[in-house]
Length: 349
Image (cartoon, rainbow, N blue to C red; front, top):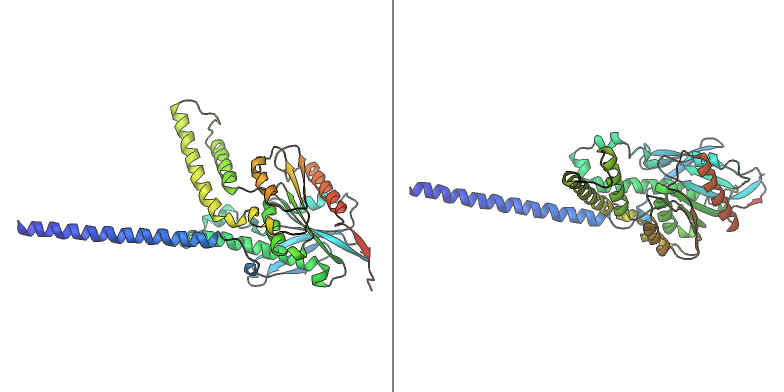
């Protein structure tokens, strides 16, 4: 009997040690996770941005490539610069599904100045195939991987900025006046670079820009979940109400996690650092991605001089040529009024 008691006591001691080891492991995991999260969420600094370079393939298409990781590359489309003129430049970075179509839509405008539209480098990264290929190591470092994608996108945008700024590149085709124009998902990148390269940016256009990532993700997760599971927006009955509650709880948790990972991408951290640079907002009155409460955070963070224009409707549709032309016209009018869409003669010989 004493032997049984001894074995029982030994078992209890072992269970206690296993419990302590598991508790220590959990505390270590949570501590390391918190430390990683704190490192990831810090605002981006200029020294972090990797270098990219621009190569002009022809008169209309350019290739932008990472120097440290040559597999990373994207393209940009160039229009403007009549022979013998030195012109101001606008660089466009729009949403993942936009790019050249916005440039094509503005071709009818009588605008001789330079315009460059860059295809979003992150478009390949957001594909489902990339995420499905992740293993345990990639998911553990997903925060760092997402931040790296933003840094490389900033690197491509920075290369374009320095290539088209005549005071930096010495190319007589370009003046020293460059406007960064970010639309939708492109807006956080242009706002960030305008803050970090403030002395080299003459104007900032933020078109259908959004922030408050937690609110944005939460609204979209709930909306998409209701569509996918064919759930009504106003549930009736205990079962439907319980399902809707579960969906909203899951959406809220995922939204908090992702928004915490992406906190460094929210424009409020960068807009206050932009000085002596006009900022212009173009917004949709019924934009589901950027409700007026969310937009107010951007407006309050932006320093003077700043201005805004409200257009009817929801978030811009990249497949609507009429809407794209309208936005292009407003962009041109603002740039012209600011003296940022001008050309002057130079000796091309």
